[in-house]
Image 1 (tube, helix red, strand yellow):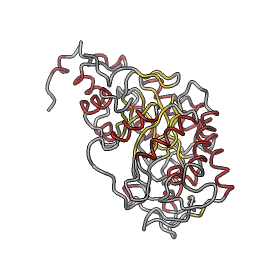
Image 2 (cartoon, helix red, strand yellow):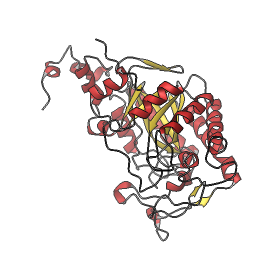
Image 3 (spheres, rainbow, N blue to C red):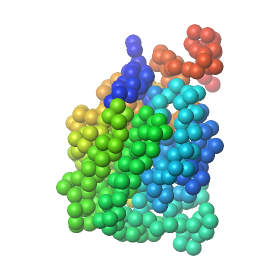
Image 4 (cartoon, rainbow, N blue to C red):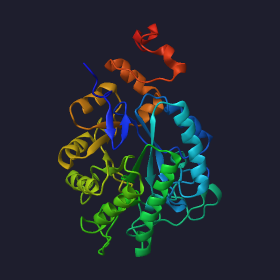
Length: 371
């Protein structure tokens, strides 16, 4: 029987060999927004992971929109040149396609790296701990350890789509095969969508006729700036997991609006709207929302969140619960996760010539049980 997980899929004009996506995972290792040698090593490793698509970490559309001092950016020529060097290398030596997640951290910006505490930078910090002003739709802090953001003005709202469009054009020049907008996890675009962080009562307030409409227009502007053959999508929230927050019903409607705006797919995540909200910890906890969105919104859908085993991923795709699966930490643990998935599911992955000697046909060790 042919594996569903290892069947091809086409998004716009992009053809992927399988349904496995390396999820975007922040590395907090950039130099003033510029990709570093760490990115060359990390992404170069994943270029031959066996995944059909590797999506690089949240890459921010302005300097003040970074989460931390170590976050990637794509807002000036230096950022573009550094990232182009890495991606050209990865595409030259690897088999996977590469996508980019464009983001603005909003009120979650000016934060510590996770291994430094992961909280908002203190007002009196200096050097690598120096804070900067954040902004959001309403002056509501992300949590007790974050300052209140500056409330956005009409001028701020007018400028934000321009930043995303400019970054998308840079991504096209670099040669990315796919572009997605980060509309989840409490960052800027999600913070405009959810009433947890947006309590305005003007045209940018929460709801389908205000902030949502603004986000659909922003998505349409990015879509128009990118050649039609390159898929453009968004990571969205399937639930805020909080009373008064966004629900899966909202996610279905939001996905419909993004489809009407011209987007080709959505990646369904959840949570992050407020620091004290806890998401479920069950395996594949976002899959039910992804399944509903795929069925009811009629848009290509990717599921993400505690998808760890090959059989679990296979079952999700085979049952029609999602078109693709995004896997993060499992790839950090085993950069050849997709190779092992292929072995277990009776499929093959494309390898570079240098690694052909470990194919099923040429290496007896493939059949040996793993310790």
